[in-house]
Amino acid sequence: MTALPLDERGYPIPFFVAFVGGKPEFRVADAEKRYRCVKQKLCWMCGNPLNHGKHTFVIGPMGALNRTTDEPPCHNGCAEFSVKACPFLSMPKAKRRDAGIPEEARHPAGISIDRNPGVTCLWTCRGYQLFHDGRGGALFKIPNPSCVRWWTEGRKASRGEVLASINSGLSILQEMANQDGPESTALLEKLKADVMKFIPAFTPMTCGDLMPEDRD
Ligand SMILES: [Zn+2]
Image (tube, rainbow, N blue to C red; front, side, top):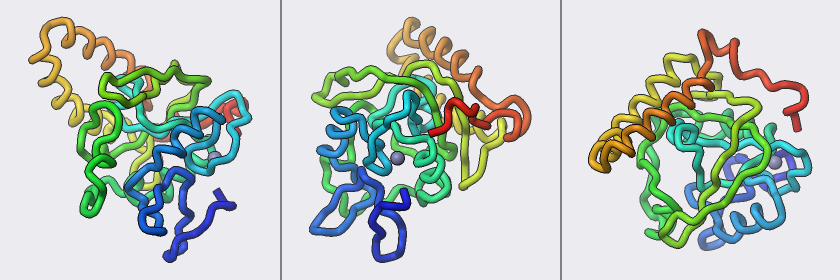
């Protein structure tokens, strides 16, 4: 991350950031860079090769629940840097500012729930699968993790904070599943039970420390 160019405020400009009119637009991901990250196995944050066998997805609670994201993985160190430094990820009360974003960039692949998730999940694993979202885009299917950490406001999140964030997103999904029928409701229950295995038991310190073999 230290080799990244800086913007006029002195923030590093992540690799994925799109340039609009010659200026970095932090709210929009560059589609071509996303393609290069997949093709050349590059880190979404710094653009350098992911030469380690494991990588880390930066996802919201709903991404952890359905094991799906539209963003390629990063080096673990880059993922940690982003949860400490990114204004959107580190300040859950910050609202997304959509003004001035091109319409097509507001709705990336898949169905995203338009809310600030409050907590961010760092999901370290090996590999992924790409699949079509049925609307012309591609999504990442995330495999079982070797380590999962939850962050909020630039620090590790507590169990209560993670549960509150998951439950607020779940109420939206629950409604969608109920309309869909009993099969969807059952699937959602299963996904919910799965994600509960990866939530810190008591305090932030009991979960969230990387094993040495997971480091970059
Ligand atoms: Zn990186």
